[in-house]
Image 1: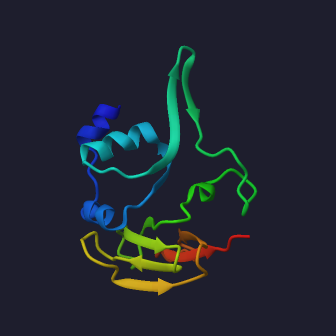
Image 2 (image 1 turned 45 degrees about the vertical axis):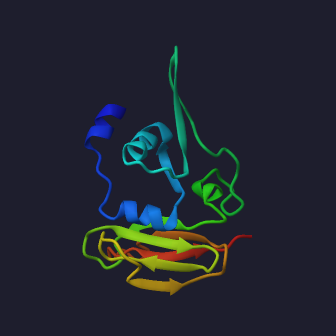
Image 3 (image 1 turned 90 degrees about the vertical axis):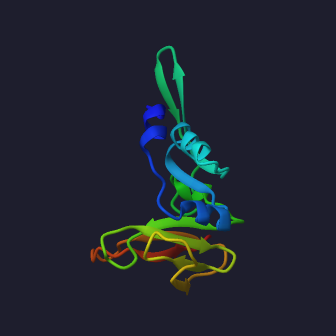
Length: 155
């Protein structure tokens, strides 16, 4: 499976430039063993926080990256893996055109930088929202097919 992914998965246009400019941490619910080889093929050395999978004689076993309860929701979740000292990259359909594009959240300034196309360059839209070190969240909160920014205040 890894070989097929390495041969067929393509990174979005502009990802290399984004990675060079922001050095994002990749937080994923996927498996590190599927993400790492693609980044390696692309010559990208980024921190990846993802689940692990390992083969055992009685079958494959998954180890989820964070079993501790989150301080916000009380359940094991991705928020515990978000970096506290670097930018967070998200994708979303910011303008309702049916295509996801990149957004970057700077937790030090509580600022989102959003692009409406997957091309290189700075964010076409920027918005300060929340407080420094809040957790960014993205969603279509009202069902209009446009993703919108949000934050979760740390307790």
